Each structure stands twice: as C-alpha cells, then as structure tokens.
Length: 595
Image (cartoon, rainbow, N blue to C red):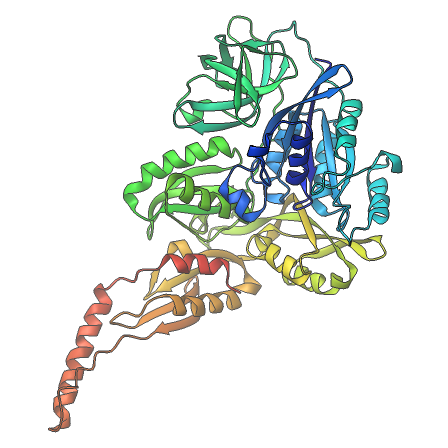
C-alpha cells in the first residue's frame, strides 16, 4: 500500500489538463504508440468535438523509480463550472491533486474554487505551471500569483509543457515524493466508496470504487450500504485504458466492480460497498449533495416515446449523477420530465447526449431557476415551473436565489463587464487588483439573470479573457411576475416565464417579435400576445396566407368580387375558431438565444 499514489488533476477550463494527462500516460508507457491520440481519456465524441472534459476519467499507471515500483491512479477532471460536482467526487477518491495553471493566462476563477475544494478535503497540492513552451507565456508573473494563492515556496512550483512533454518526469517524481500513500487498514471490514458508475448494455451497471479499508475478492457477496441490496462480485479489476480484471482489490486501490445489476436505481454514486457477512460499522461520508441550479422541462417529440425517454434518463443519470428529474405534464407538450441541471452548458450536453447515445429527440422548455413563494396564509413552497405560481390574490411575496459571482478579467474590460453585471441587477461588493492588469470583481446577483446568456456575453465582451465562478448565498425577496405568451388567446404553457417586473415589458416585446419570425403563416391571422395576468403588454400578428379568390373575376360588377371576398372572410373566421397553431421546436430554442 505504501507504493500506491491516488491523485487528480484540477484546473480552470482549457488550461491543459487532458493534454498533460496524455504526457503522463506516455512517459509511464501506459498507452502504446498505436493507442496514442490527443485527449486519450476523453472517450466521448462530444468531448473531442468541443475540446472540453465532461466526465472524470480514472486510469492506472505503473511507474518505476530505482528498484521501487509504484502504482499511480490518475483521475482527469472537467474544468467548466457546470461540472464542479464531477470534480468534488474525484477529489473524494484521492490524496493529492495537481493544480495546473496556464502560464499565458494565469490564475482564473475555477482554479481558485477547485483549489478550495481540494484544501477542504486535505489533499496535498502540487502546483504546476503549464504551457511554458508558448511564446506569450509569462512564467515569472504567474509563479508570483501561485505563491500568493497557495503560500508555497517558488521552488515548489513545477514548470511543464503538456504539448512537448517538458518537465513531465519531474511531475512524476513529485507525485511519488509529495503525495501521501493511502491511509487505511487492510485488516478491517471492507469499506469502498462508489465515485462513479456507467451502464453497459451487455454487462449491466459498472460501478467505479475506491477501496478505503479491507479487501474485496472476485466472487465475494457484497452489500450496498444505502440501498441495502446484496450482490455477488462477478468481476472486479483495475482501470487501465481498457478494464483489466483482477482477483482482488486491496486498501487504497481504485477499480471497478460488475455484479450484473440491471436496475439503475440500485446504484447510487456516493454509496459504500461492504461485505454481507462482515459489514463495516458505518458508510463513508460521500460528497456534498448535488444542488441543481437550472430547471427545464424535457419532453419527447412523440408522446409514445415517454417510457423510452424515462429509461434513457435513468441510464444517463448513472453516468452523470448531477442530473435530477421528475415526471410532469404540459397542456401543449403532453407528458415529460422536469429536469434539474447545474447550468446551461450541462443542459445542452444532456440534450445532445440523449440524442446521440439513446436516439431520443426531445423538446426543452425555457429554463428557469427555483423560486420560493409565500402566501398570505403564511405558507411557503418551492416553484420550479411558472405554472406552479399561486393566484396573485393569495400571493404575499416571492423570494429568488442569489449568487456570489467572482469574475477575474483584464483591467481594460472592467467597465463593460460592470455594465453587463448592472444590467443583470448585480450589486458589486468587492473589486481587487490581483496584478497590475488583472482584476477580480465580486458581485451579488440573482441566479435567474445569469442562466440565460450571461456566460456567452461575458466571454464575448472580454474577448474570451474573463473567467467566472459562482456559488449560492441564499434567497431574497423579488418583484417577479409571470409572463404568458398567448397564440390567438390560448396560452402556451411551455413558453411562459417568471421574470422581474422591470424587464417584463422589453422581454415580452422581444419574444413576440421573435415568434412572429418563426411561426409559419396559416390560412388565418395569428395573434401573438405577451400578457401579465389579464394585461396585454405586447402584440404581433402573423398575417394570413391569402388565396386570390377574385382572380377569376375579370370585368363584371364590383358586387361579384365583394361576394367572393365576404365568403372567404367567413371561411377564415371559421378556420380561426377551429384551427390550432403548431409551435416549431426552433421557437423554444430561440427564446434561449433572444439576442
């Protein structure tokens, strides 16, 4: 056990975690020349296309130093703020962390928040300066920033390049020297933490475990502490590039267990695995409970696919424990699910994965956050959906969630970013210069304002230089109204939103204009209206497609034409009463990208 090292790689998005992981695998000869490719641990097409890590990936490497052989378990983690739950799980399975900072960009917002996560879990931090081979790298300044942040010595910082492989052998030396060996007792009853799981259509559910105490052998009867279910360990093994079966896993090992489980609800990430006959006294403290930030309805395009969608969501939840969902129904869209996501990117990725991995084509409603409604009688309840809003007569006030946002940017963009935050009802609480041209802005702002397009605008204003991180600080009273969209007087519940009173007028107008472009013309006029309660605040009309019924009247009396037009008018009136308006999928998506 003294020769095992478990460590993860943490950094801000795009600071070179996956590339550096590739070099570590190269140097330790874990992958052959034939298996080499960029971002070898990112096994999803989606990750490759976007150049981001979505899932944490574990892999075992063998490293020889002198006569000693070491087993290194590496977990590569995502960098985007929406996947911070993946990072918290990886950190729970490790004793050390490589903190990677880009030598061209310096310390960013996610660097700081991931670092705090690692420090809370008492991980040994090894700071690494990456991308030192780039011509615009500024290693001296960035080293000073790391020293200020960590309080370490300047000699503790390792310089490396994930692209060229420079400095990678020194990193492996530092992992062996600085990261502590796992603590645990091989003689105690088995205690293993499930830190991830995935669904395989042939083998059932594969759970990834980190053994904290004791030992597990192939064929053992094991028990999952939280669910109380018992299984036989059909196969156990370690995670190389492929899964490698082993006879046993000992204290400190990271590996997988397959026990023929087919029902997705029976495996919970964060659960503890122990022996049936000699169980451990208590389960391991898992990681912090996941809290969804953004809620949206996900509906199958064809209502017959509802059960297939449920099965797909359950399998996806195995692979992504931060997804939450519960059934709901809508007048316009039929049966579907109310899903909780960690952010808009997370929502986009889930939608894309449902399409690619499960062939499920879905409609997603306008995303919103959860609000707390207080009634005149003193009751309070959570609203995840605009249709949950109580009658205005019985409503006392509504509270909305607030976040503390930390934005790190170049000082030249400070003014425009302040304007952006103020337009989103943000209040500045702190402004601090980290270096002469880098500033950290701290804002308190409503979560509901940033779920739409805040991140995109932040990136475009700052030419990609600003980084953003946030955490919840509680709820505060807000003047919110429910904005309904009516088509010919009929409400479309999937398009209704809860919005701040000051923004309702402009938002309603923009929404009606956008829908006018997207809704195809019919044989009758379509009135698109934005309404708050009974008050109409905006209106657009999609004009009817006219058929020239008077074309055959050449010459003759004007009354002949009038008679035909009157007949057409009656037909259009009748059509308007019975005709229904189909809202295309594009319209639901366009609402998210109103700019």
